[in-house]
Image 1: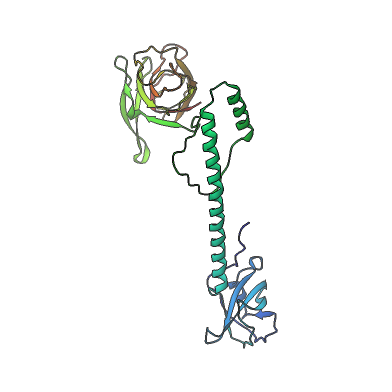
Image 2: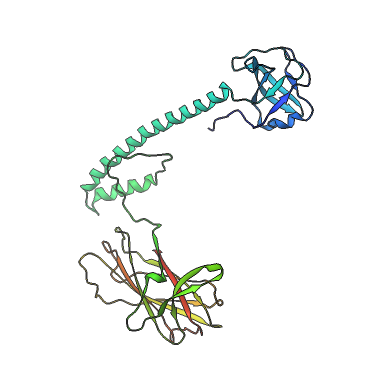
Length: 336
């Protein structure tokens, strides 16, 4: 539950229009000065009454505001109700009550965090014990199957606030949100049929990118590589190609991709399997085009993490009818 702090506002400097005695439950301010105070919806708040000496004062709690009239509880914060004359100062000052509220809220927060820390420590200890038991089980055994079912029934745990964990913390599975961006400047033209580039493109207002250019009528290629997370499990990857064009009028563009993923001690000379390809429609000169497709690299599996790729434009077959130059800006790779 949120702390109900007393409302505060800068520059509340008012004066009484009429005097009050110790029993008065309302304070009438000079005309128009009620607007300086917090609104009726923002009650309660505290103001301090004093004449020439601020040490001689009374703190009141305002519980309602109607125009220039304040409805008040007299003599709060260990002060006493007094008689006050017209012209007495009515100001919003920092008082012990306001400071005490802040201190109490901070103390409550520190206590809650301390208690949460104890509870989280107990959870971490329990997880460590569970990990020791799981380590002795083989995948597919009856015990492991039962444990998996129990974990599935528990679902995901949500811990709010700061958590401190001593020692190593291991998490199984794959980081689902992994992705990497490979700009054209980090690619290279294939030795025999390389695309032209990298070419510097200067857009409006001084913005620049680089591209590899794939001209119409020629099947050209670029190569690029990436490192996958070490816990990659062989799943399909999503490739998102960003490209533009500086000429051309119409047609479809066909991109084709071959990829190989390798692990420690494996040959980089392994042949690619069948390629993946995707068709995109030309939308206009100097516009961003996004072509995406899912593809499982050759050799995909656990303990595989070095990804090599070559990408080419399938000009002349498979429906590539775009009559201009495709300018590849980069490729984003993520888990499909």
